[in-house]
Length: 430
Ligand code: FAD
Ligand code: UDP
Image (cartoon, rainbow, N blue to C red; front, side, top):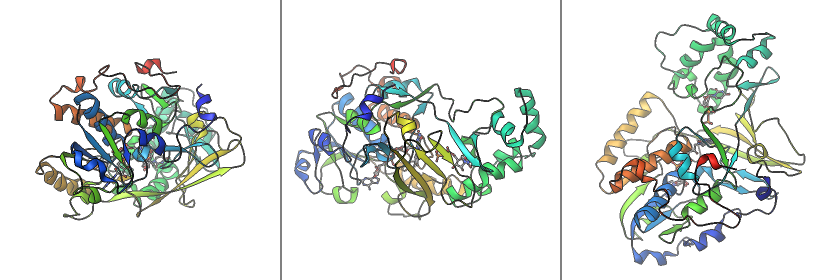
């Protein structure tokens, strides 16, 4: 366990600004850095922008200005110690998992890891049941005693509805488990989360959550499932701690674009916004996060409990101490309320949106010296590891290197934060 660093003093303050200043952050409006000129202006300090900043600076000796309109680095993966000293994720639960040894090895240069396998329960019919639906889910819900995968498979098959062509998020589920389980676990959650019926959403959305005939109750089955031992923000700080990288926070691209000199631009914000919504707005789904701290040690048995019922306005509650292993007499939680308005968090996968995106993509391809990377800029429902992989591929393309060489293992000794040693390979996580 790696409780020690989290349980004591917050190592990164709420905005992490003291460390940023050492790495060259300018206060908004302080454009002293501008006259030097940069090889790259990178818009957005989330995974896409930060990986590219690190690679271009450390791997290719480029001078990079990394900006973000938020007051912090890390994008949606940003975490910080709240007023009670509990490490929380400002934009909802972020759990790192990947099957890419390369992505895991790359990030391992900037953080130690804490082993963590994510487990989620769904509150259905007054009980907390495993989701993804597995044999335990149906045994508990229906008072069954199915003891083998064959029995479970037959039970699902007897309820599954034949769907000739699986197109939508409804098709995926009813073709596997039938309508009743679909309605209990998926229909309400999806309607709340996306503001539309699963029958209107691409199959890829609910296909993220498989159905199991065994009793594996992990949310993910990826070969690498770990949390950064000191949090995501600390990992980003280590990644960006390079003399070639200047960071400017509270700075929108529009404010900065004409005030700095740079040769090339990397944009990781919403692509439709970049082009002034020329073809109309791309739909993004938003969330409202309600953070609170309870005067009790624990609230729920696992990090995330989903609430599929439409009678409940939130979709899920996250309790962070399960993710971080932090020991604390209180516990901090977040309720998520989906919303049409607010920061763009999710591209909405449906055919008409993909078509609209393709128009922007064509425009992007015809725009010289600008590269679009990340979840918002390429309008893809990507997990963190996929964004890291995408950014590494873009770096390889920009520098004419092979993707396998792009991670640049061992090309520089990464800076050591106090009390932190680097692991060379994912397997060496503590
Ligand atoms: P972002 O993190 O969104 O970063 C883009 C940055 O660009 C933002 O900080 C934004 O402020 C900045 N920006 C945008 N426009 C401008 C502008 N004009 N000027 C200046 N700055 C600008 N993935 C997982 O792997 N596991 C999970 O458990 C997981 N959980 C998630 C839970 C939620 C609620 C959400 C919303 C996402 C989750 N993800 C998860 C996905 C993960 O957040 C993304 O894959 C990843 O953070 C995307 O990185 P990015 O750099 O593309 O985008
Ligand atoms: N989903 C659901 N019920 C659940 C969990 C997920 O209906 O209990 C559906 C819902 O449409 C959700 C999608 O599956 O948006 C993907 O779930 P995931 O947990 O991957 O969502 P994320 O963590 O990306 O918000």
